[in-house]
Image 1 (cartoon, rainbow, N blue to C red):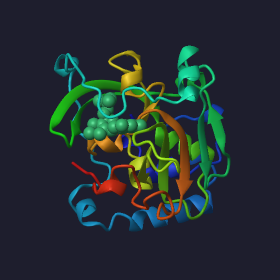
Image 2: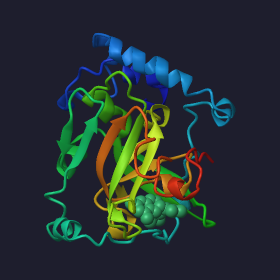
Image 3: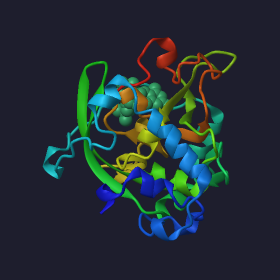
Length: 258
Ligand SMILES: Nc1nc2c(c(=O)[nH]1)N[C@H]1C(S)=C(S)[C@@H](COP(=O)(O)O)O[C@H]1N2
Ligand SMILES: [Mo]
């Protein structure tokens, strides 16, 4: 059962290749000292006031099919306006690739079909936007932890940065591009998934097609849509406004725990 898998078990055994991603059998893989270092660092991150209040792997509430909202309001970008995105959309995202790079042993570029072949998780959760609305939806996607485990974290890895396809603000230097970041504790949380389905259907463009982050226990703006690249970093201080996200650079909290 997925819930019983601890972060330690997920982190140990990063030597596995993509084909062998599975949420069992980690114990058979030789322990990797780099990964143990990462674990030690990640442990330190728990020393935040919110983290002392919320056990790190406590699950967000999950609902039943009957609770699913009839309408899930799209918010923020409802369609990235770049030509590149339009071209990918036209052929059903067959040419889209999710890059995972930065502080990883094995950078990868995954197609939607690759992601769909991997073990998935489905969860019915409530999305809370700071603008004052909520909606319950059923999300299906690939657990992020398993992907990072497969890519292999390098020493110094502390954050996953999500680069999106949309520019929410048109600026010449690209600083208006939507991006987000989470720490490794949230990256390895069992409900943190890269979702390609909402309510049993491929994601609509308005909800972030072809892939968006679900990081339950966090406010809506952390759930980056239109994912293009996940960059593993030791710090986000040098990136754009330095606060770890498009909205964070404009004053929102980085740790948007609910
Ligand atoms: N790339 C991108 N991701 C984004 C946004 C956005 O504008 N661009 N808006 C955020 C906000 S504020 C919310 S509430 C949710 C909305 O998700 P939805 O459109 O599926 O309802 O996406 C978040 N992720
Ligand atoms: Mo939001």
